[in-house]
Image 1: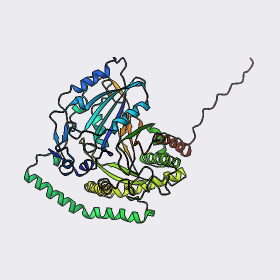
Image 2: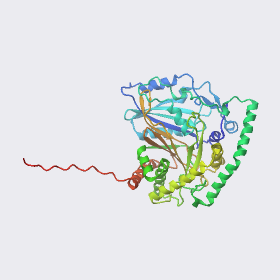
Image 3: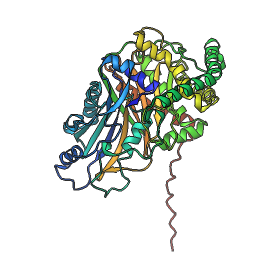
Image 4: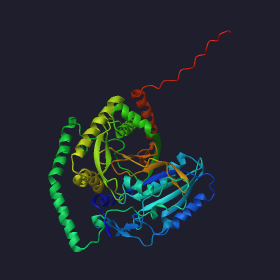
Length: 480
C-alpha cells in the first residue's frame, strides 16, 4: 500500500455530495480522413481489451468508507478493475454543437466518483459536428493535479498521424521514476527513520515558515505594502454555498495574441490571463449589481514538480493576487495586477524548495478548515476565485490518426468559491475552461464571452494599430 501525502489526503477529507473533488480534461479530436463509421466503436472496444492497467489508474482506496478515507488514506492495487464500468461510450444528437457538448460534460462532471473503485472515468463522446469527437476523463484530485493530469494524457498521444495500435492512457506505465519514500517497502526501521527525518525537517523549517506567516499577517494589516494576504478579498456572488450540479464553458484564443500583449505591456502571460479573468468578472458582477468596492482576489496554484518528474499526486504551491476589479480604468487594472503578482512571486521565491510543501499547507489550511468545519461560503473567503494556467504540449498530437484539436481543463469548486477558471496551452493556443456551480452562476457562459471582449479591448489600448495596405495607384497612361 502507498500512503497519501497530507495535501492529497486533504482532498479526500473535504469531499461531500455538494463538493466532489475530482478534476477532468476534455479533448476534442477530428476523425482521420476516410475513417469508417465504426471507428469510435472499434476504438472503445480496443481500449477495453487492453492488458495490464498501469498506476495510478489501477489504484483504489484501501478503505473507501468516510472514516477510512479520513484516518488512514492509502492506495492499494485493484486486481479486478472493471473497464466496462470506467470506460463509457456516449453520443450527441447529430450534429452536436459546442453547446450540446458543454451540457453533457457539465452533467458528467456533476456526478461523484465511486470510492469503492479506482477514482477515474473516461467517456468517449461521438456526434460532434464537423466530423469530430470528444474524450472526457475525470480523476480524483487526490490522485493527480493539473500538471500530472495533462502529462498522463499526453504520454499516450503521438506526433505521428500515421501511428496505429496505440495504447489507452491507463495502459501506459509511468516513465522511470525515482522511488518515493512512501512507495518503498515499509519496514519498522524505515518507518521510524522517516518519522525522525520528518520531525527534523519540520524543526529546520519552523523559523522560515514563521517568517513567511508573519509576512502574510503583516500584509493583512498593511495592504498598501502590495502583498495580497488570505481573507483580503470581499464576499461576492461567487463566494456563497454551492450545490453538486456544475456548469462548464470554454473559450479558445491564439497564444500569440496574449504573448504580444504581455510583451507590449511588460507583463507576464499569467498577468494577461488574470487581467482577462478579472475584467470579465468585473463586468459580470456589475450586471448582477454585485460588484464589491474591494478588489476580488485570485488563488493561483504554482507548479513545484521538477521537469523530469512523471509522478502523480499533488505537487503545487499557492499564491494569492489581486484582480483589481475595483479599478474602472483597464490600464490601471492591469498595472495593479502586475504589481500584486510581482509581490506574490517575490514572497514565494524567498522560500527554500524544501519548505514549499509545508508553506502550501500553512496557506491552504484556512481553506481546508473552512470546508471541514462547514464554514465555507458562510464567512469571508480565503480568496475569491481559483485561476490557474497549466502548460500543455506545444506541437500537434494524434491518437489512432485522429488529430487533437483542443484540450480544455474541467476543474473543481467548493463552498465559498463557486467558480474555477483553468487555462491549458496546446499547439499555439490557450484554452480556458470555466467550471461553476449551476445554481449560483446561471449565466456563467457570459464570463467566457467577456474574456474575449476584454482581450479585444486591451489590444486596442496597448497595441499599435495595424496599418491597412495602401491601394496601388493607377498609373498615368502616356500616348506614344
